[in-house]
Image 1 (cartoon, each protein chain N blue to C red):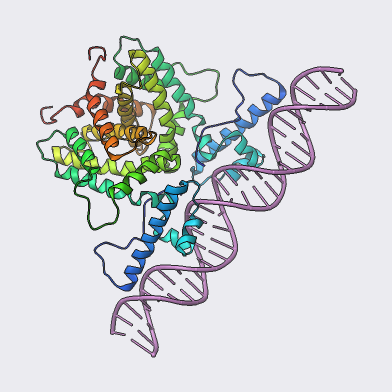
Image 2 (cartoon, protein in one colour):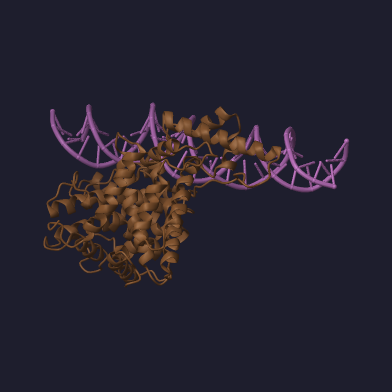
Length: 222
Length: 222
DNA sequence: TTGTCAACTGTCAGTGGCTGCCATAACGTC
DNA sequence: GACGTTATGGCAGCCACTGACAGTTGACAA
């Protein structure tokens, strides 16, 4: 009933017949129209019927491309998650695990090295992310998505450090704490007025840097 | 559209007229019938119509007592949250903040000192919690609920330590990390077969104890 | 006791997200 | 150009949830 995620998407490396191109175009049209409507009039105040009317396809078709309404909002976010994982994989093995996650997260939101092929800009990603964080219905779906991301991250960290993720809970624990702080950061950022990428990265850095001190015994010594 | 929480509940310390008693009875009937159905045939496979048919009230009445279907499932959970906050308030000021949260969480699931007045046993709480953790639809609502709990916890911690929660991020950060680990623990526990309170408390202890080591620079030294 | 007010409730119609089913049209292929 | 595959549209329907209106019932005062 509430799973989320996309489906029916044409594979990037797949064949390039007319049919495939048409599917791609339909999907892009649905995606961009939906985002435009979401961002102008709000997620809750946009119905699926509005979206399909604007694109001129049936509602049934919409639900063949996206498993549900939420999935459209998260289609863009997938790129950010993928980039985070890619950055994490590239961190040097000598780096402590928490530091590696920190760097990967900050780099994921960097405007440098934007993927030139796609028309999904960081600007759009930020706006989508901001919408997610400020819409309760999407916020719930966001955390659900993060469960999967956390699992992948934990697996990566465990592999990096050469430990067994089943018996050694450290990878899970580290990722869970990291993820908790990231979630809180995103939420705080989403509720603010100044909402650029820079503000997000600053806030992320500030919070992650405070994690060590926050867990240490007494705070008064600091 | 997806707020959650209960409403229309008769206040515990309120008046005790016939009307009030009737309301209380209706609410209890809805609550217990819903939980019984949820636990026997699953949350998703139970419709609101089934619940109201069993209690013999209209669907409209159901939605006057509970803002939505989720809210019934969390009515029990509220007791656990309240107990956590109460336990946290009672922790000695000399205790480090993270340790205080740890103790409070473990005590909140203790079977000792059960509230005698209510007919909500710890056994029922555990079963409800387990259902929440193993049902995706409820899992989302759970995290949404936790946002509120986190805010209250952070405020309490900040007050304990005498810091300003607005300028000093340590309280927020500590609570976010703690909360992240707790969520992960609950999720892991919910997916297991052996699901008693004891297993939950053991897992909680194990994970929270690993947080320090997990954040320390290198894991190989340990 | 009775009348009045407010609160609780049921009924009904309707919206919005979402799914299954089936016919049809568009493509790809030989 | 015929044929199998696949995308699509349309429709009927489920379920969660809401607004509006009317009827009922308990509370309270006269």
